[in-house]
Amino acid sequence: MPRFSFCGLVSGRMRRHACLLGLFLLSACGVLYTIYHVKPQDSHSQQGAALFQVPQLISTTKTVTLSANATESDVINNVRSYTSGLPKTNEVTVVTAYFNLGQLDKAGGEGRYTPNLYKKWMTIFGDLDNRLIVFADAQDTVDLFKRIRARYPPERTTIFLVKRQELWAFRLEKEIAAIYSQPNYPKHPPNTINPLYSCAMHAKFELVQRVIRERLYTTPFIAWLDIGLFRGEVGKNQTIHLTAPTDLDRTKVGYSEVNKFESMSARDVIARNKVWVGGASFVGTPDVVYEYCSDYRRAVRLLLDMKLMSTDQQVIYIMYLPAFLIKFQPKVQLQLYRPGWFDGFQGSDWFFIGYVMKDTP
Image 1 (cartoon, rainbow, N blue to C red):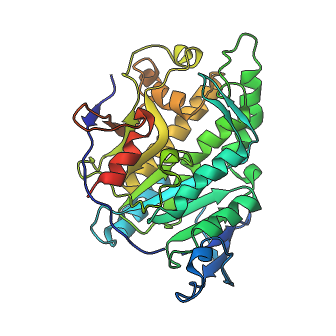
Image 2 (tube, rainbow, N blue to C red):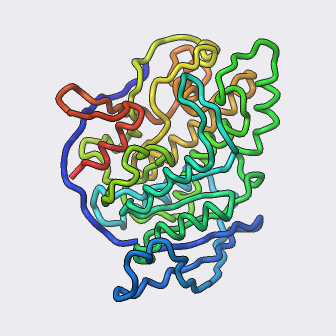
């Protein structure tokens, strides 16, 4: 059995902070950033329209060169050194991404997820008063985030416009497609039907590692947040501020527990579309999260070699299976959060960790 701890919801108040806007374009040699700084709106201008206006931008460019020979140990040591100089708080840098894969038909009666639906959910990030880093593969997504984040001061938002083919996760597409085309391979839309959907799920871990490696975070904790986690908060005219749970073990990564862990084979996890933890959000210290993302990427490689694949939720389940531990030893354990009857939580268990961060004082 995997080692994990269990926690409930801690109530509290939200705090307000300020935010920056940057659009980053990546080059093949080093990392080329084209940075756009938002010029704050005049406080005496039309306040109601400010959120929907494209802000005036001032462009600058710089190149950051990363050592290609740096080992994982080197990176983690550098991360720890950098993080140790940050303020000792439970503040969180949030990372998210959207890759437009067209309409997604979800299994289990969840219906159809369209790009327009995702864009509706994206608007909640205009209410998120945290340091935010966004990755997108389309200019219209970049423009949307520029509009909704324009009301924050300029050090809080960074947007990357990326090309899918430059990402490790999307370069796995053909290999995953070949696995899904095997005779009698389980069919769970879109998980084992659409290889690009699987690629997008794997990209979470690559992108979070990039943020950590390049020191783009400014807080002692870092969290991944799916576009749709706070879908239930859209249109509520509020400010959301996320902080790390006060009881989070700094040697672990926090997740929402959706179902109890059962021992089975990796093939059964995929065949039965089993879920242990919800992939919509995870949180931890940058060094531990970086190492965890490396664990995940190693597990993906092992499963591909076994001609098995699905989404992040199935990969994470398999990572901690006793049978899989013979081949694979994760370095990082998970800390699980699940609502109890005393919490009064009315939302989905899948999103619980997000609400723990939302309500942590």
